[in-house]
Length: 237
Image 1 (cartoon, rainbow, N blue to C red):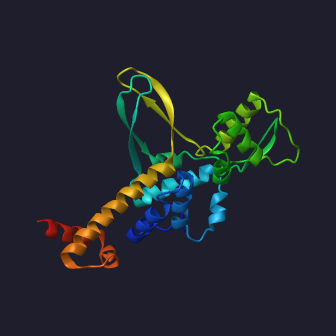
Image 2: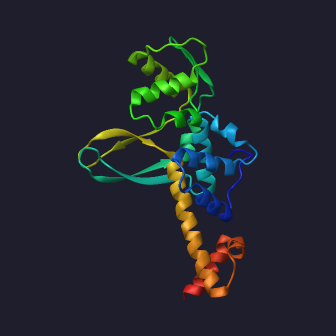
Image 3: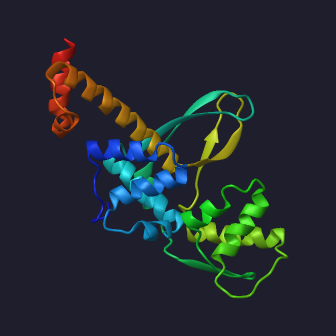
């Protein structure tokens, strides 16, 4: 874990959920990073390469929730429901590249950031969105409008190799129909689901203890998790 990472408190979970519940997942991810790394300016976080953001979010997940994440999805062929699990510490251990830019035949490019992704996220055409990101990341001054599919593919491959956690892809297998496919894991959306679930549970606990003892929200949240659980057990007997 990064030495400067701050482990979130119960009150901070509630504040995050309150201020970020209506935001886009990209903004929710940056909000979590700002809370976990309070010494780093928000603008600097927005300029981190996507892999660095995902790596930091994975560390927040490990420190605040669990080192493994579990989820459900459905097979795109037969619609069978299946579960998956990902060990984030193993994922982080496989992060080997520290490059900040790539050089290909089409030019020099820095790695994409959340800011670049935000500019292209509303574009419905994937090819146009890819071009927008590439042009945002272009380091040389020359302009061009004749991007070939081969250029886009080569640049994308080199960026993926230089930033292996920029896009987390899961290889899934359906035991029912034997179909295999890859799916993207949006770790920002996943961790926000965790924050939302914990916040709603905390609100329920505050309500229960406030009704029983007349405690304020701050007084209830100041209790350790073990002590709060003990009081809840007494109330529910």
